[in-house]
Amino acid sequence: MLSIIVAKAKNNIIGKDNKMIWHLPEDLKHFKELTTGHAIIMGRKTFESLGKVLPNRKHIVFTQNPDFKVNDNNVEIVHSLLQIQDLIEGEEEAFIIGGAMIYNFLMPYVKKMYVTEIKEEFEGDAFFPKISENTWKETSREKGIKDEENPLDYINNIFKYLNPLKRVLHKEGSFYLNIGDIYFGTKGFSRNKGRYSRKTDKHYLEYKIAKPDGKYLQYKQLLMLPERIAIEMQNAGWILRNKIIWEKPNPVPSYSKDRRYPVYEHIFHFVKSKKYFFDIKKAKELGHHRDVIKNRIEPFKFHQASFPLSLIKPLIEITSKEGDIVLDPFMGSGTVAEACILLNRNYIGFEINEDFCNIAKERLEKIYDFQY
Figure 1 (cartoon, rainbow, N blue to C red):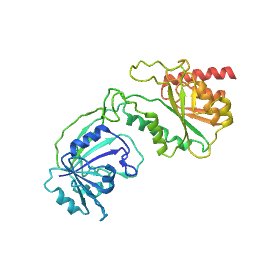
Figure 2: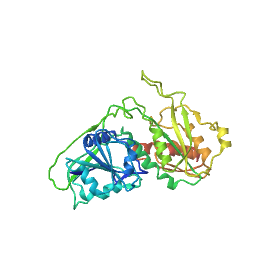
Figure 3: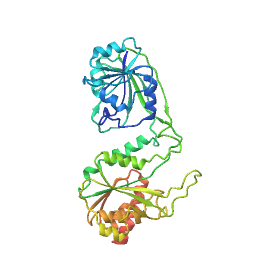
Figure 4: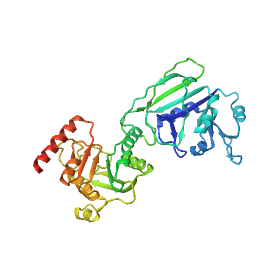
């Protein structure tokens, strides 16, 4: 029996530049469990993207290049459908693992599909063919539980909301991003997994909780989320001009007994074009001309993640002019708005938390009353 195994995004994207866009440790484990001991069928580019021959599996590589050779007993190079059929004859189940061209080419001969659905949309150049409801019947579905601590979800969601800002950013404008890091905790992650079959009414349900993978996802692992998000932004065309270190002389106490205390956060300075406004004279005047900035945490007047006004003001003053518009997509208690009022900048802010909106409104009204 010929089956497909695939992980696809909400918009059917399965890859970009011949690479996987996501890293799902539990789904990789799921892939290994299903395919070990079976033949796996793929295109040449997919085979090359693996980086190695996967253990305990027969690799059938379809290519139109007659000169392509692999010196490994577990790899068979084929150039026709007939050759594939001969190699999988007698196999209980053989799996097609990609890429897009192979999925399309062999779809008419497939009896079952194992589909991992990622409930996000991605940019990519490889698409999985649309699953026709007239041809395929879903025989089981496992509902995954999204967890905020899932690094992939967090990175993808942040990137999803930040990347469109490039469209509205002035060609000479700047974008500052402050993201805190976390350590991998003890909660598991899960995924959605659907199974489809042509000729069976059999229903079965599986549920697996994602666990540490022993590599990236290990307990006590610093996940380096700021850097990973910054790299996603770079891959999308943003220009990273500075990785500013905000050093805190009065950091929040740490009670960990087996690592150093964190005393800094990153502030990434992005632009969309090579020519942008940056007042180096003002930066030197304000002591913000180096990429390490010492700035105390201010008392928690509004909420615990409140950004210090004394840190925000120089950033705005150095990379914008009076009368410019400053957009804050995560307004919080209105610190950026206050800085804009004090610096004679126009301001637009978004905040979904009603309590923070009320705090910001009251805060800004007091500033206006004082100034005007």
